[in-house]
Image 1 (cartoon, one colour):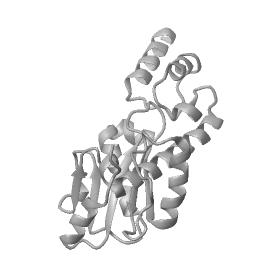
Image 2 (spheres, one colour; image 1 turned 30 degrees about the vertical axis):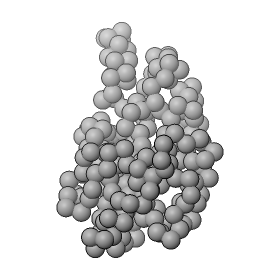
Image 3 (tube, rainbow, N blue to C red; image 1 turned 45 degrees about the vertical axis):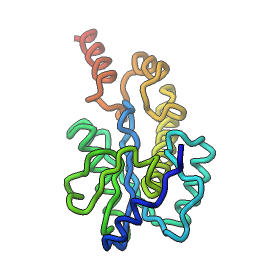
Image 4 (tube, rainbow, N blue to C red; image 1 turned 90 degrees about the horizontal axis):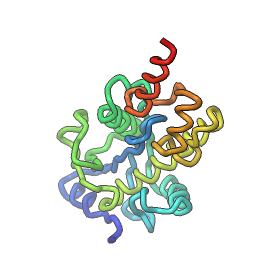
Length: 210
């Protein structure tokens, strides 16, 4: 598979954009933990080598690239909480995390490159949606790496507070171990109650006690 390149950024720059940020999120699928987004503005003269979709890179490669990206680019992280996910749904919460990441950049971007096929409403008119952008666009790939490293580290911290769910290895995603722990230990404040596996366990628990 070819590596993500800088062509989307070059096109935006040719249209007059001076500051171009790639934006991606991680954590839409897990049943625990926040959703995390990153916005990254790469220096076209110092594009890190080896960028790629964070999901297919090894953990060691992601960690090494995270260090390089943070040293050579402008990076901002945004989160949406479990409470927000349950209140407004995971799609809107993902967009909220993206907006927060972009708002955290020191200078407002002229143009945004968004992973996926939807552009959050606040970005309308100054963004391009790039399907499978983390595998095609250098800035989005960098954002996907930074976001995943950040969220995985957060889930490791939460795993120390709530042992038994395997968050240090499953990052809150639905695994057999995680579902079994949810059944045996119950839901934590960091479980997404709007997600079916958690909702079903809570419903069963309420049925037994009522």
